[in-house]
Amino acid sequence: MKKFKKSFALLLSASLLLLSACGSQSSGTGTSANPPAAGTTEEAKPVTLRLGHVTQTSHPYHLAAEDFAKRVNEKSGGTIKVEIFPARQIGGDRDMLEMIQNGSLEMGFITNAVFSGFTPVMDGVQLPFLINSYEVFQKAKDSEPALKMLASLESLGLKGLAINESGMRHIGSNKAPVKTPQDLKGVKIRVAESPLMLDIFNTLGASPTPMPYGEIYSSLQTGVIDAHEANLPAYIDEKFDEVTKHISLSGHFPWPNINVVNLNTFNSMSPDQQKAMQEAAKETSDWIVQQLIEVDKKSLEGLKAKGAQVDEQIDVDAFVEAVQPVYEKYAQKDPLIKEFIEAVEKIKNP
Image 1: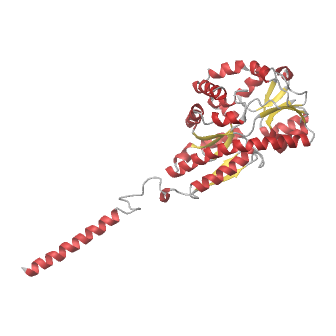
Image 2: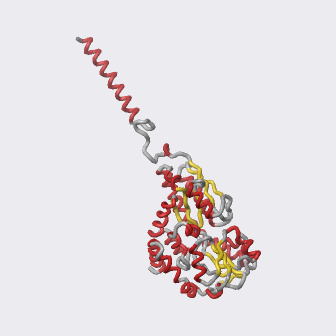
């Protein structure tokens, strides 16, 4: 009996040890019974994202792209690498937007105006003379209507991460300085390939001519167009000042790009990686607005030093009155645009 009790005790002890070992193994990470929690570092697979944009490497688009790439790499613990392809290396804005939609390009900083050919919702950001300063833009881009606008891009297969500014736009003309709407009557002005841009300049009495950004210089040089509109850095970076007689500081609207990534690509990332992308995008959009104040100052000084004819006396009130039909038309196109207009007016007149 004593031998039996001793053998039973040994058997029971061995069984307990075995059960303890199994329990420890099943509660550890990386087993099929208990996989790691979603979003842990172990689940974040390394990913490389190609980001395309249309401007030169000294332009705010590229400065923001570099800032974003650095931030997202740090925030993701090195699991997300962004490779930047500037200066239309991959294609124009419209080409790249379509590529991002179909997944042949992962992401881009796509000019806001180009979205007008796909959805009217982003047009609210560029209604003429609505956003009239970088301070207003900083608050407007983070408003609730603006965030809803970004979220609506998912219907296009896109994840809108942020709205980046690249500079208030000013009119360059080879006819005469543009001080009032009357100075645009019949002027052949290049505009982005966007229904909104056509509506704005048709309303002002101009003759808008849609064409890709990369064709502006040669078209001014050969007289295909009389005028164009661009932010101050572009007059230097793209050498538009060489083929533009008069630059009028109209500041008629901002020129944002939308930080977008293919929706399937974004959804395939771990929760931690998605968070890193969103946080980096927000921080970059804040950072570039602050940089633009100094960028514009230096660009204006550079243009004047080169002898450019710069006119700062613009009848803004006359332009605002002239474009009211554009507001009425676009406020009816989408409820979010009307909501955004009201939000910006509150920002300007608290």
